[in-house]
Image 1: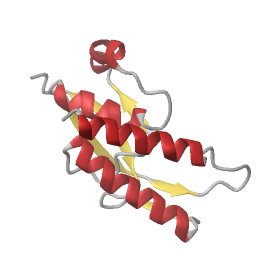
Image 2: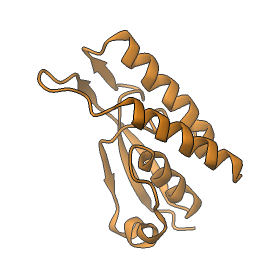
Image 3: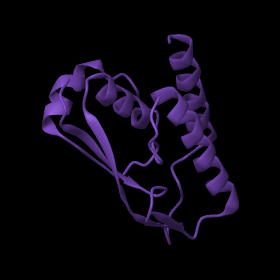
Image 4: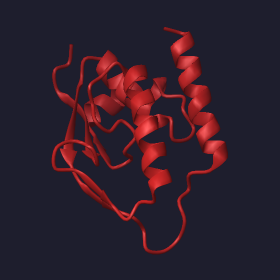
Length: 125
């Protein structure tokens, strides 16, 4: 067991975290994805899908060769890897404000990849 902190997640959903300017559909998708992610990871984290993260060098050196995800599912895979290697994963609250310009990179293809990853992960447990 490592005992050190492998990942710090900027959490929209832990105490003090918040989202601003999100449409209702995005809130539902994000919350749903987090419910699924928590069950896959086996953790009580509030925000497994936040991409605002800091990884320790020690964790990355150990895990980099074992990571296989290509898209958003990397967020779940890294948490799962950290926990399985004995690293702590912590959350700090953030205020996430919806972008004023541009569009989300989240597409239907990304959602399908996420669901496929989750199903594969659950099948291998």
